[in-house]
Amino acid sequence: MPINALYTDLSAYYDLLCADIDYHAQSNSVRRLHQLFANNGKAHLDLGCGTGPHVRHFIDFGYTSHGLDINQPMLDLATLRCPEAQFHLLDRSTFIVEDL
Image (tube, rainbow, N blue to C red; front, side):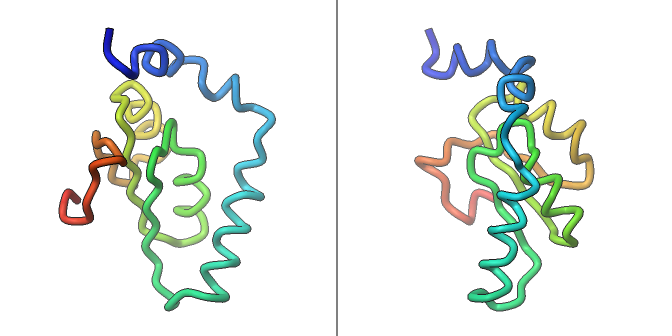
């Protein structure tokens, strides 16, 4: 059985399981840290993006966003949520920037 089989099977229910998570507040906190300490760039990369809720908020904040995940069904849902983002089927434990 693949290591991410359970994760794949849950992809259709992932957003329901995470309905209580305040993705907007989380994204806004990260955006605020970026404003305070970063170089004013407008690029965002979500490692392990799942169905893309954080990506959606960063796009809405004006960022260019990429997401990566090891699960194609999750990326398919993320692409529906955020068609303007770029998503990549990659393992974040072996990811290097040049992969994008």
